[in-house]
Structure formats: structure tokens, C-alpha cells
Image (cartoon, rainbow over all chains, first blue to last red; front, side, top):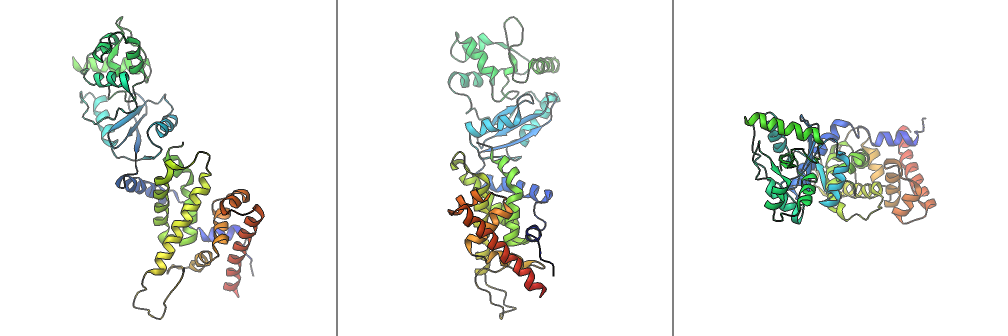
Length: 207
Length: 158
């Protein structure tokens, strides 16, 4: 008679557990059930774009974060866990539509985003700056000075610059449309090359 | 705190092993989902530095036992009135059903020790902390539990 080893017993008990396809399907359904039960505070996905791979994250209120590839996406998700909620799951909920509209934007077929945004990651003057940015039309630019004044504090030019540079929802909240008065670009979360490419694209499409 | 998605990625397979071991394949998916939904609910309140694997293994064990009890309470099909079941028994799964049943029927501490040691790969020190007993007692419980399961093979062959 063969006496089974501990490992054999455990293998018999767990036969078939953990096959990758099984778990992927279960994870997708978990996110759906979590959302239905009000337990999904942040849903996210990634999407490819001409500006590199983007992380898109949304709360039930709206899009809360867009992160460029050069921001470490894992680090961004950890920040969201601390700043918003650790109840974060990969899910298409609220972010598939963002990905589609970004595709259209990069293809030159969309000039206005029709999306709910959640500005909870910015407070006070920074938030006022971001709210103003949403009014700068496609294909146009404003100076940091103009933005500071429009957000209610004409002397806070540096703070306006910093609000743009730390915009949690770049591309959709168009901080790339704010440039220095001398015509140089200023800081951008996606890097200066991406800012330049966006402004060039918008100028071309608008012409 | 880690995003919950990372917890699911890291612990999903371990939780599935526990659910499979206690319930067999048919109901394991349900137990897996119930485990992570309950974990998601409690996650923001998990104390920093908590042993996430032990925490999830405990929830998975509870959820699987809940399903076993619900199964035992369920009225049996009228077709075989002679086979009335009571207590925790494994359902009508083929092949290794009785092995799952044998695990389910272990005393709580032995069953939990087997789950923690052999399915969640926890150390005996951690298991002792979870079971509120000494490391040596945790080791004894796990070894008694697995010995009981081994006897099941011997009975089958004799």
C-alpha cells in the first residue's frame, strides 16, 4: 500500500485550483459585484496612446486620475489607495468611456471631452486652477499669469504653475494649454516632449 | 496600504486552494468570490502591519464552512429520501469527494491548522498566533489533521 505524502494529499484536495483563466474570470466578476455593492471606490485600467501607456482611474463621481507612463503606475495606485481609498480594482467601470474618448482625441476627432471628473485630489486654489483649465478651448493657450488671475489670485503665478504641473487629470483637464509668457512650455507631468506634441497636434487640427 | 487589486493578484490562488480543499470544485468559485467581497468590505479597517495572508485564509475558511453548513441544511432531493444527511458533509462530487468531507469534518483547530499550514503556507509561529496557541500546539494540530486525512487513503485501499 502506498502511503501518500503530505504534498499528494494537498494536491488531491486542491486539484484544478488556481488555473489562470479561472481566476481572471472570477476577478472580473468580483469587480462587478463590488461595484454593485458600493464597495468599488476606484476602478482603473490602462490604455495605449501616442503619449505612451496611460493609467486611467475613476471613482463613482468621475475620472479622478490620469497617469503617464513615466509616473510609475504601481506607485500611482498606491498613492490613490492612501489619498482616496484602498478599495481599488481593475475594472472597465467608468474608465472604458475615458479610453474611447482619449482615442478619439488623439485621432483628431474629438475637441471636447464629455466626461465627469472628480477633482478631489486637488484642494483650494489648485482646484480653482483646474476648474478654470476646463474652460480653455482646444487649440488655444493661456499664460500662467492669466490662469492665476482667472482662478482668483493674480499674484499666485507660481502656485498656478504648480497646480498645472501636479494636475491629477492631465489631457482631460488641459493643463498642457498653459504656457509661459515667453512661449516656452513649462513643466508637464508627461514630460516636455508630450506637451509639445499635444500643442502641435491641436494647432494642426484646428487649422 | 496596497491597492486591493494587488491583494487579489497575490492571494487569489491561495484563497482558491482553500476553497477547493474544503468544498471541491463546484462551490469553490462562490466561496472565492464571497471571501474577496468580505475582505474588500473590511480592507480599509485592516490594521497596518496585519498578516494579510493569515487574515484572508481565515476569511476563506469561514466562508467555505458557511457554504458547507448551508449545503447541509439544504433539503435533499426527494428522489433519495433514504439518504438523509446531517451535519457537515461533502456534496455529490465525484472522485475525491470523501477527502474534502474528511477535511471538513476535522475538529476546528486541526482543520484550521491544516488550512493555514498546507494551503496558505504560513509558518507555525504565525499559525500559533492565529489559533491563539503555542507554536508547538499549532504544529501538533496540523500534523494530527494531515494524519487523519492520510488514514482516509488507507481505509480506501483496505
